[in-house]
Every structure is written in C-alpha cells, then in structure tokens.
Image (cartoon, rainbow, N blue to C red; front, side, top):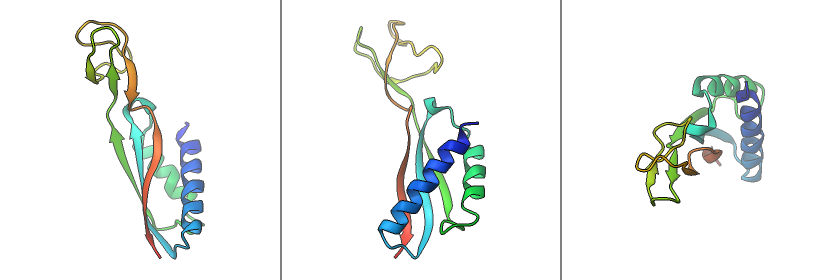
Length: 114
C-alpha cells in the first residue's frame, strides 16, 4: 500500500507550502497522478483524509487529476497514448515505447486562503 507513503509526502509538502505562504486555511490540494504510477485514487483520498485530521489541512479537499500515459517510439516515430500499460509496445511497429508522460505523481497546485 504505497498510497500511505504518497499521502504522507503530499501532506508534508502541502503543510510546508501553506506555512511558506502564510495561509490561514487550505481549501484544496490538487495532485496529478500518472496512469502508470499505479495509484488507487480512493485509497489516496482515504489516507489523505486520515493524515490531515489533526493538522492545518483539516477540511481541505484532495483533487486527483489523472495524467494519461504517453509513449514515443524511437523506431518509427510514433508519439501518443500507451494503450497496453503492461507491454508498453508501439501500436504501429510493436517495438518498446519510451515513456514520456504518465508515470509521475506531483502536487500541481493548492487553493489557499491568505
């Protein structure tokens, strides 16, 4: 269950950002999660809600945006969606795709009350 460690890092980063900006309240935290990051959004939200229960993020809304998996083929030049995330093969020539998007998890933005 790596959602707990992801949520912990997310909460720590959000707390630091809120403090650095002298926020009175955090309204929402938006996260981008790549399709290939293998994150369960419901579990991430659950962990987030537990971790913010007793800190300044309490009451904030976690928003999760899914980033599609995108690959690039060095063989034929294809650049586009990865349809089979387990094989990561080019739909045109079947060679292995280089992943260029969709595997990261990052805090995109926060809505703060200053």
